[in-house]
Amino acid sequence: AGKFFGQNVTEFAQGGGTGVDHQMQVVVELSEELAEAGLSHTIAKRKVSLDEPEKTISIYLISAKSLSCTLIARAFDAEDQEIGRAACDVKFSDDDAQYVSFGFPPEMDRETVRIYRISRKSLVTESAGQ
Image (cartoon, rainbow, N blue to C red; front, top):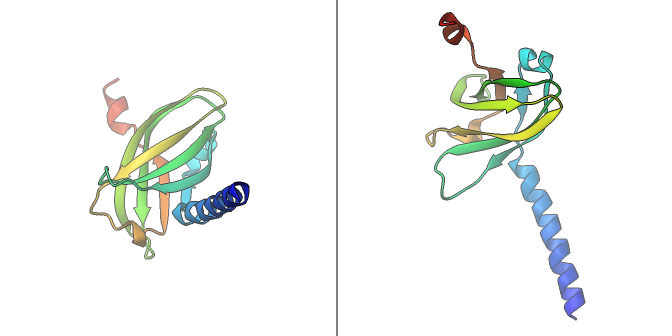
């Protein structure tokens, strides 16, 4: 009886987890500049935490080349209007990968987000001082 019960719980947990994971996925688009720099992504999900009021997404990024920069994630709604923005500093080595998280303001309604577009922060102000 214990083995049968354990199998059902495991099967239920696996099936339930799959459904929840799929519902948590978000649509992400990398800029052409990042793609040309060797960056790609596989999965992107909303993170849910009662301890953190931020609306966070986590993206698994893969880098063919070394890259060190600030990434900007912009949230767009169905009318293609920007409704939120978040930044994250990243550092990749050649043939590297990591999860990168972007924390959006708690005021942003993430249910209205259609797509998150990721780009590199402009270096105009940083390179002016060099």
